[in-house]
Amino acid sequence: MNIVLGVTGGIAAYKAVALARLLVEAGHEVHVVPTEDALRFVGKPTWEAISRRSVTTSVHEDVPEVRHVALGQRADLVVVAPATANALARMTAGIADDLLGTTLLATRAPVLVAPAMHTEMWEHPATQDNVAILRSRGVEFVGPESGRLTGDDSGPGRMSEPEAIAVRVEQLLSGSERGDEAEPADLRAPEDVPASEEAASEGFRGLDEAPSAETPADLEGVRILVSAGGTREPIDPVRYLGNRSSGRQGVAVAAAAADRGAKIVLLAANIDDAVLADVVSNPAVRVVPVGSAAELEAAARAASAGADAVIMAAAVADYRVADVAGQKIRKEDSGGRAPTLALVENPDILAGLVRERRPGQVLVGFAAETVESEGELLERGRRKLARKGVDLLAVNAVGWDEGFESSENTLHLIGADGSLVDTVGGTKREAAEGLVDAVADLIRDR
Ligand code: C5P
Image (cartoon, rainbow, N blue to C red; front, side, top):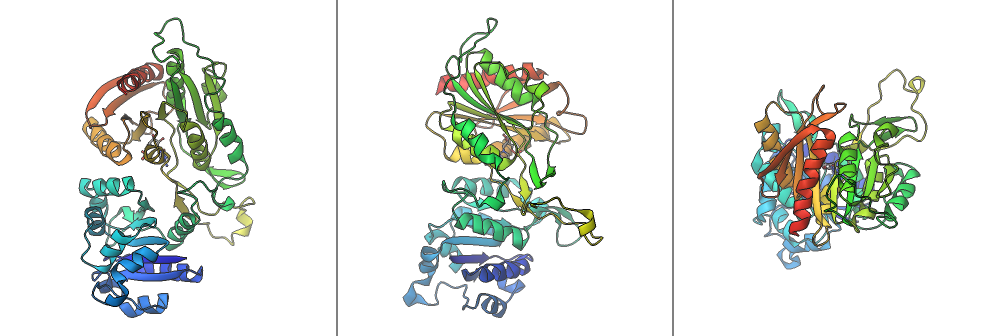
């Protein structure tokens, strides 16, 4: 395949050399397009030797070939690694005063970006807004990872490892994260995907409305897809990476909406039977068990087409293990060294549903944050809302002894314009009722 590798001016440019090598070794035609700044970190001869092609930064070379647009037009994929904060800003604005800028504007191919910068620059609202805009245009991101940065600091901002970027490149080239084709089998949890996908594709068919006598049936016949619980990302057949979400809040949302007459498909990620007891025998609720983020994504896509509203309360793992071992990883085979797990980013399911939303569909996200103050909680919530493009975001504080196992919760509901619509709380059921009120208002206004 024909890949353009844009390299911008950050120290992580040296890691892009390894990426170029991996892509060339995988049999791709790699056209490296460094910016002038990138050449201060890694010189032209290195790029030319690794890619086995001539390299230029200028739009004024190879003019008869119309190189400034031809590279982009011919590309099957454009990767920008590393992408500095400046590069993201330039991409967002569509600045095209160098070869990488014109290539990015001329291409219709998927674009994959691997950001690399200091934590403060990554977290700055300017950068986060740029990321949100680029994502909304369909640009894919890998990383940044959290870890050691240049100098003494560490935090989010480190460029993903070349191997992890190369895995994403192959996924995008195979169309698995953009089109309808299945992902390569070795990149997702084994076997169990089709079962939940099939169950989810039953959708809302055959569900009976079952409004409770005590509540108004103002959601009668409304179809709501709810996800709850926490995903588990397999490491090998016996181990996984998981999180502490119990699913209580999401199940309470499903129950509260069903009591008002809604039909519910509940994607239940690893939820205890005791928690599910509230909904399993409700004729208005279809419970679809899911395991990993890949499984949740397949099931969510299958069921969302028929939904009037989607409420994503599940805690979805941001990363999965790059190579799931087919056999149990054994200590005695490790040669006395602790193994290292390479991770790759999971697609943002909610952001995908927002991109593919059907007219009038209401999309609601959750954000569980560890914060120092309510002000910080709301600020983080507003930024997340902008990034995800949802109609409503339910934000709550979590910590070592807050949020997860507790039966109480407080949800701050932030509207699409960033305003605080309501703060609801008490028991998780009471918080759920407050959230369902706000969702009912949105559905009514459509
Ligand atoms: O970014 P963060 O994980 O905090 O976003 C939380 C919201 O996004 C939740 O609604 C969660 O269900 C959803 N999400 C998702 N896919 C991911 C990560 C989060 O749909 N990979």
